[in-house]
Amino acid sequence: MRPGGHRQAAGLARGQVLSDGAERNRSPLAIIFFTVFIDLVGFGIVLPLLPYYAETYGATALQIGLLTASYSLMQFLFTPLWGRLSDRYGRRPLILLSLCGSSMGFLVFGLATHLYVLFAARTLAGIAGAVIPTTNAYIADVTRPEERARGMGLIGAAFGLGFILGPAIGGLLSPYGYDKPALLASAMAATNLVFAYFKLPESLTDEARRRARSRPLVLAMLRGALSQPRVALLLVLFFFVTFAFSNMEATFGLLNEHRYGLSARQTAYLFTYIGVLISVIQGVLVGRVVKRLGEGLCISLGTLMMVFGLSLMPAAPNVAVYCGILALIAFGTGINNPSITSLLSRSTSIDEQGGILGLAQSVGSLGRILGPMWGGFTFGLDMRWPFLTGGAFMALAFLLSLRNLRYAA
Image (cartoon, rainbow, N blue to C red; front, side):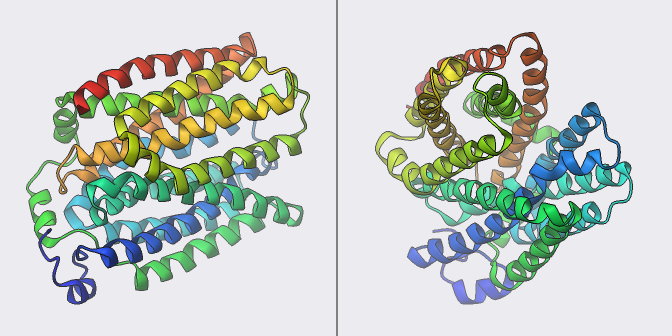
């Protein structure tokens, strides 16, 4: 049992660790799920409208691409730092600070009068969004190792549900002006901040925080992580998975339009379909599948499904078969991310989890920057290439995952 485990009531008041047992898992998991869900609803409200809003200020296609990439760039730069700071000072303060930053970012976005203000707003939102690995570390703090993948899956489900509900709300509000969805997202983040302030307990012990303060912040941690074969391999796998999926996301609408003749509304429905599948997989199935097969085998299974799914996307004879192919990608992505995150958290000590998970998300952000760039470039050469090359990247990830199984054995 972790230090402070018997002092639940007093610990919550002082921001200390939660006790072991059923109560240790259920209440914090529900609260962090709700916190992440509301945050992602706000993010999802704004995301689909961003290109249209930017065009009202005369943005070019390149500027819109840079505006989209600015968010991921900030996540790439700041996630290791946020994660390491959460090891030193606790998960709760960093999560609260992130919610405050998100609210301010959405507010600036909604009140923007020039394109450069939109860039400033997305930069602030990206810095605030860099705290996501801290929520993963929170899950790692309050779950036992054998329940870790299920907990990570719940966070993935919160992401999926947020991306389902958020764009729908944004679409409903868009006829009233592109600023209105952003202002609603700001209000939701502010409400979420108040909720988390009163309801979200600290998950990390004082002792773990003291140990973390004696450790280096980021660069030395990076060298240490890469010196561990298993951790380094998991980080590489996470990059490949994120790169391939982001590459697909960036060119999904173009393939739907030019290969299958689908409208923007039909593409939105397919995005919702993928989001629903990922939410169900991560919220319901991941815990059971990982418990039976283990994280290592689940990673291999997920990457193999993405190999077939991505490679077959341009070759479907009709939309019904196309939906089945998308289900392969949804299952592969849905099982991969929580399995990799769970295995990473189990490969490090509690006072290093935030930093390592932050490093993983930074690697993922790099994939989200490079993936769309690669997809746009290769689609211009041949509409099949983003998906065939994405499948090739995932084939390499599959071979690497077999090596990971050897380390996990």
